Length: 39
Image (cartoon, rainbow, N blue to C red; front, side, top):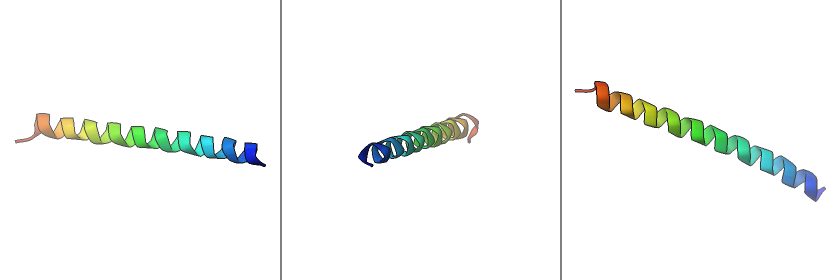
């Protein structure tokens, strides 16, 4: 029903947000490393 849809959608959205945060953190960390250790 509608409630099931909202719950499933909410969980998927939270998981996607976690993944996006992790990816952004990895990119920022990698960029910092390049700037510090780079030429």
